[in-house]
Length: 120
Length: 107
Image (tube, rainbow over all chains, first blue to last red; front, side, top):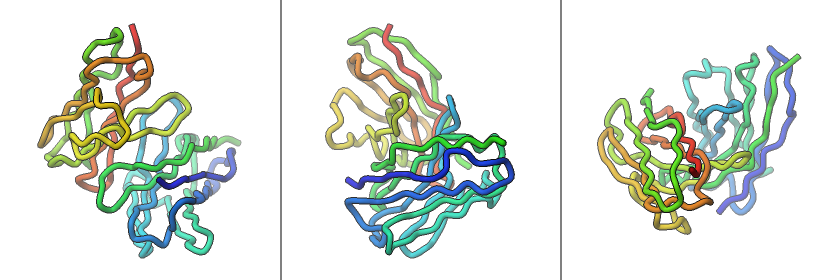
């Protein structure tokens, strides 16, 4: 199984851009085996899929984020990243990076999650 | 979006009890549903994929069934380590969506 680790600021001001990186070990982000995904969980609430990227660079996003999210892949660093612009308090959440194998359905590798708080 | 309606939102049961959680999809998702367990402060862990397939390494007391729009997750004999929140998730169609979760506690 892959090992994933999120990193990035834990506090972001309203209207600014949230930026997170997921570092992958035990596998390659240039592999065609996986979707590389971001999922978030507001405090005390359920899970929301944000979006994902494939090794070709193809991206898929949750429309509920109204085009604020951008996911990118850095195969040279074996990382993938999330940017979420124009954040508000509603974007306060634990952000997880995760993978889903192309031939299987579940998200079967997850990072530990990182709490991002949106506050001035 | 496909809505996943999970019930109940919480339950309390005794050790050894049979526990059942339901998930209803707003449209036919074939068998493209997964079930996860999440413990406080941790990432979710997949238990069942493709409606009824047990993830390797997961105890056999966890089972899944159903088809179309109606799905069931069962713990055949509840153990103390099973406390946590359980989520269903569909992957039939983007955006992939989760149920609201079921919090399981020991009575």
